[in-house]
Image (cartoon, rainbow, N blue to C red; front, side):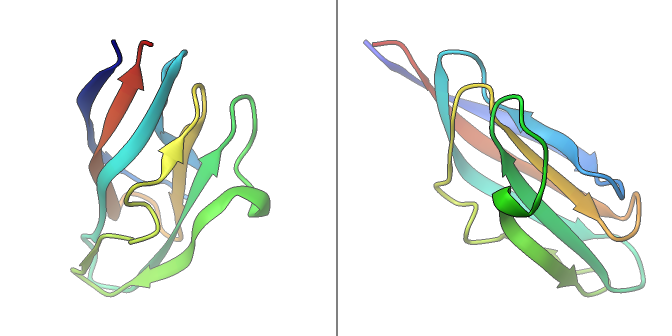
Length: 114
């Protein structure tokens, strides 16, 4: 019997290089339930999100949320992430135009078993 397990993705401050927010475990398919991005600075800051295949790198071919600018103090839930499937070993990665001012957090459902 397959299992559906909710998993929290803890808050992480984005850097200016793509870094991993979540990795789908081996033999598991994951679906994003929610994900939010919050700008804690006093200036607008852009961020980008990638769905990177196993052993791949973040790049234009796997952008899910293209450069989106958050106003100062704004939070945003990108609709294109909700329900997104993540293959086993794949990662959700993100970067921001300014380091340590965009916080990302969310939750996924992991499906495993037969």
